[in-house]
Image 1 (cartoon, one colour):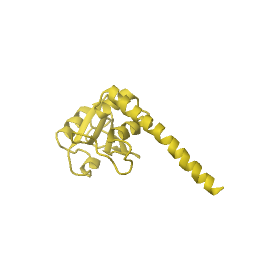
Image 2: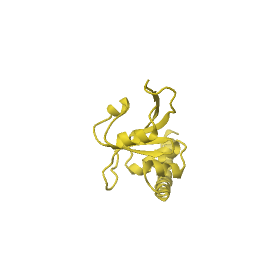
Image 3: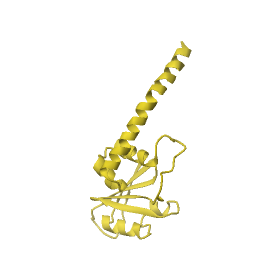
Image 4: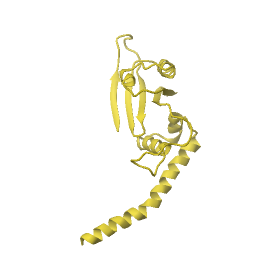
Length: 153
């Protein structure tokens, strides 16, 4: 799910807007344009501040920000260790879902790697794992659909 919004204030007339991608959870991407510079936004968020209304409304917990060119990516800080499995789609890890979501939005491996703070090789690994799982489940899906269709005839 993608949301778009624009936050501007009267503090600086005619400023260049910074593109912000806020990833509040594993399935949502919120795209904003804000009138803070990328460096200001990254520094504020990484210092524990929440300079925008949408960030102040976010659940409690530390947020992490990183800058990719003129884009800032903000997401909840994750604890180290194995990715948690989501009950909605237990077949994919959190990183696989994130990489797949960003790739479906048109980002290439290098851009995804910068956004998720991973190497490009790790992103490609996660995307290949998704492809392999889809290939493994496809025959079962086709068989179940065929059996269902056959029972209707």
